[in-house]
Image (tube, rainbow, N blue to C red; front, side, top):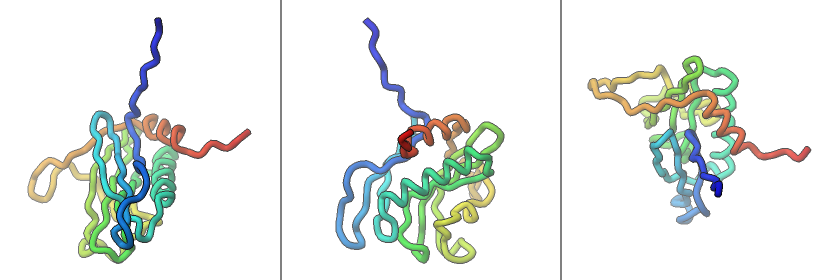
Length: 158
């Protein structure tokens, strides 16, 4: 007897379930998967709706698949002038994609956070912090990013 096993994706990012909270405290739970690592996060629904996050993630993945050197998967977008934003910069090096989590602090940005082009805030990839501590980093392949696009892109009927 042959059984089908579900293969977990190497790379995925998604919102989970319906929004929770109310007013300026409205958010959706989300999850990012990088190989065997998964992390859940709260995505605020102030300036962005769930579809805005999903669209931004598809755009970032598409840019990487087409050869962009860096893309950012934004997971916390309150409004452009917020004190901080969260995202996952992904740097493409050949067929490898190196991903780190990043806290974008307003006082460290040159101007307001640009949700249309968050890559301008990513900077260079570093493996050590200013204090000499190793920065957590996950390695994917461009094929993993393309597989994400294949799973998550809306299907257009033929």
